[in-house]
Length: 282
Image (cartoon, rainbow, N blue to C red; front, side, top):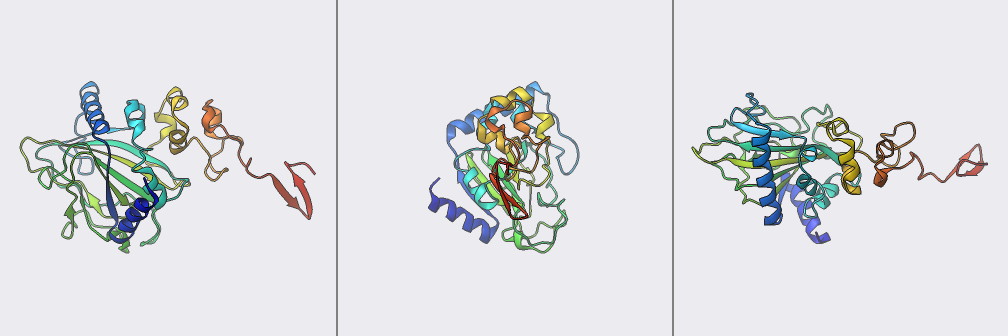
């Protein structure tokens, strides 16, 4: 993505709390086919609660389910906007497919930063990307959002939908939101349409993620990932130091050579009581 385009999308997020980008049809097709296959193979059923849905099929931990999902977090039309909104140290918080079926109710209004107990409004601590794998319409459950709500000084009530709009968009679109934007899954009032989407969710690198990638993704799959995806899954070190295991990055511990690093190796010089040292030696 060109720098001017990134800037334009970031300005839209700053103003309205969201923007929309497009991805290639071939990837969209492969994602639809894979989600449909996994729903059958895993016998996915609705979770029967308001947050997850009564007629919605959800699949969590996508990176461990099929490698086609590896293309989503690092997509060139999405990641530059996310890192522009957060910073280059951003990591993945969750990867979830959401297939809203006919008759589904309106999900409660919320933000994905709702569990963060810091005063609002604030700089974004999360970035939410909703991928439209099929057409999103007001009738079939398109994500509903409140423009400008990222500047609100509080979290929304679940039934607070009066100012919301439906984020209608064709298949192959990606809605990118400030983590503090009020939103929810819309009701599916159709009798025969399923609204298939995915939430690839990011957070700042020092924050605890919603989904635990260390335990949910097999080590051999992490070792096979490209470097940038390993970093996004948390196997690097935040700013060269945070998240280490006995002085080594998580990647080093499991033999993921792309992200194998020693903590604080960026620090080549130090001075204690006026005595300069290099590489730890006086």
